[in-house]
Length: 259
Image 1 (tube, rainbow, N blue to C red):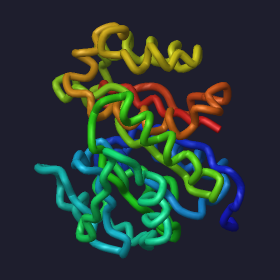
Image 2: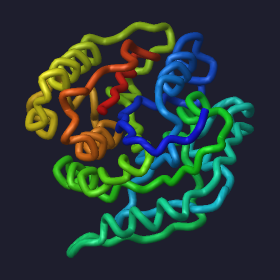
Image 3: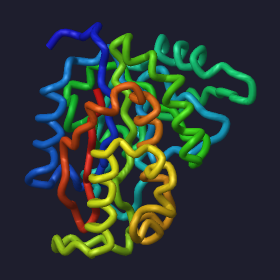
Image 4: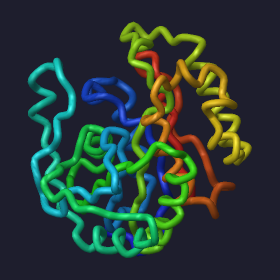
């Protein structure tokens, strides 16, 4: 697979927890998804698990992963993903985000967290594509959309922009027996229909418009990366399609591609 110079899509994916690797279906779905994509020149990750303001650029060299979870079997802490750093991408991000009232900082000792590396292990297992993770400096949907719009030009340079969250995320609803509450199904169905209608205004106001939004997302950080993706692909919303749907441990794993 040769690296592309063509315009890349923008993705929003439900990243799963470390046990995703043991699921009989989901890893294969992620692998099939990446197999249908051109090979990116670099990957820009925006994960629900890194909130920091001002917006921060993570490591631009290969560093150990951030195992930002507790109480799991030891094998999950042995996962490695030595992707190359992306200093050129970091420089481009700085330039694109340079604007009055918008600051960018560097956090060079911050490796990839599980919102970034868990899906990448399945999608690009060779770890041969440079990866840069940036923080979410806010959870305000409008501001995240604007960040996405500023980053959109990177798609023309072969950069895959990935918002990594979870389409529903309430840990009290976790059920490893596969039972799914009506709260999760109702929110997921609303999200599916709203995305299909390209109704960005409703998505931006999802806390008031979506059914059971406060139960599907008691805190909105796992839905928020979607808005960076939407901003980065505003001109291509008519191409939006769901690549992965269904539920894992009671949570909606809906993941989309735009472009």
